[in-house]
Length: 599
Image 1 (cartoon, rainbow, N blue to C red):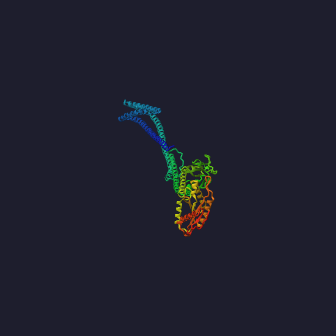
Image 2: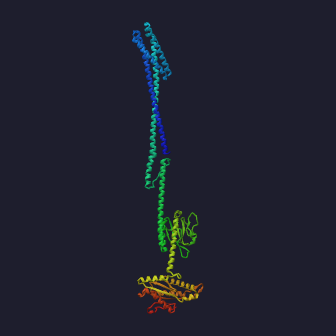
Image 3: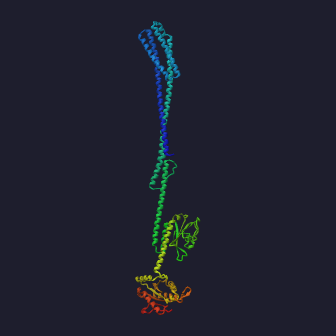
């Protein structure tokens, strides 16, 4: 029950009890008034009867004295007493209308009859005495008849007094009883009113208000300090305190929800910060290894409950290889074919979980972890695959899917940018026809050699395809380009592990062999010359005939300058070409070659 209802009921009961108490007090006072009236009536009747009896005796005494002495004053006294007696008789008649009982009325009539009879005999005696019959008058007043009438009057008076006294006593006792009854009722009502008031104060103020409010004050103080771990005890009362307790519970729940949202916002902001840091570092990566390291570093920070792999597509687009991984994924292989992944097939994220909601990827081992494969693509080209797996039934993965896709998009762009950078770099430093380092790269290398004052020797080979114009004229320029590419391949395979191969220009090539003497360079040059001569070259099914090369060698041995290395090697090449081609010559003093080998 609501406190306001209890208070209203208590107020109503208190008012009713107060009204009843007041009514009881009024009735008690009224009974007291009736009690006093009964006492006053009894006293008045007693007084009248006593006066009547005394008047009768006094009248008799005056009449007897008059007939005995004959004095006038006694006669006047007798007449005066008779006048007073007549007034009292009138008063007695008035008492008949005051609610006397039938017995009292009968006794009062009897008293009046006896008084009239006595008055008549006394008046007769006084009259006889006045007529001269003094002896008869005395005989009448002192005779037995007068005595009998006087005795009857006194008896009637006493009987009436007894009746009046009995009735007055009964009325007084009844009035007293009613007075005591209403007084007790009034006191009881007053006590009950006080008990109700005190009970309401204890029940409402202490038990239903003060105690709960004291408990809730501590809870509210803790909630005000954002201590939402405080427990709000359930209160099933449907009153104001119950509503307040429910409001506090709602406030606590809202605080907990706000804390949860704040924590989630902080985690989200932290995740966004990590993503932003990752994006900045991805943009600064210059190699695929750096990119893989950045992903493996930041992925577990962004997704602490997920393991994963970063796969990169190879140049032939036949397989994807794991470039980095984090938190030790267990279901996916390190190498997979594009056809084994539904995400790569469809070109969109694909989820594989134990619920069987979709077909699992073929590159996954059996397990309960949920997995997601996100193709990495940019400019319409697939460059890799981002893979995640989680052990919580996919809940963390589902909640983080938006971020996963954002990261995948940026990683794909970063990989594509690296590949584009590699292609641009390749175009900048490589010859587009042969794939060898170009003249610009050779110039950079020669500048580096000139800057470095090292004691280690460096050998330089200048290579020229013999009679190259013959291939262009007889078989066409495409065939000539094919010959140039084949020779470049043989040069890379022969000298690529020991140094760098450059296309100098036209059909001429340069090989720089760091830390090689001219003798070591001569050995590599001869291997190259013989490999070219021994390799048959065909184009579109037609043999192009023998292909040979002439080679000139120079070195920085014996303190010779690196600044003239190319010129000296080129001079040796010119001598080799002038001496019949398909030979290797080493620069020598006096312009004569130290070694000369004919083909």
